[in-house]
Image 1 (cartoon, rainbow, N blue to C red):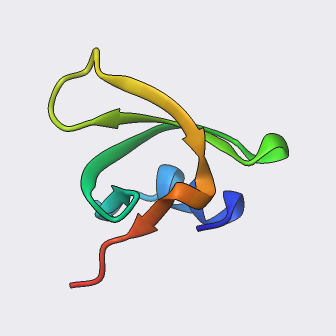
Image 2: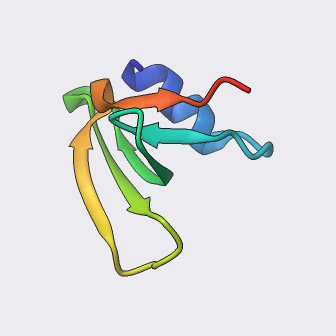
Length: 62
């Protein structure tokens, strides 16, 4: 995923499924478009966050 798409998902009113490395479901909490990084919440725990490259994020295709 690119940083602009990550920002679109973050800004969207819709719930869009995103996975980290194609495995874990995550919620995008913040996007740093300039540096291509995103802070994501992994799973249901609000304290389980990581800052990762947006290239590791993938939209889950239904």
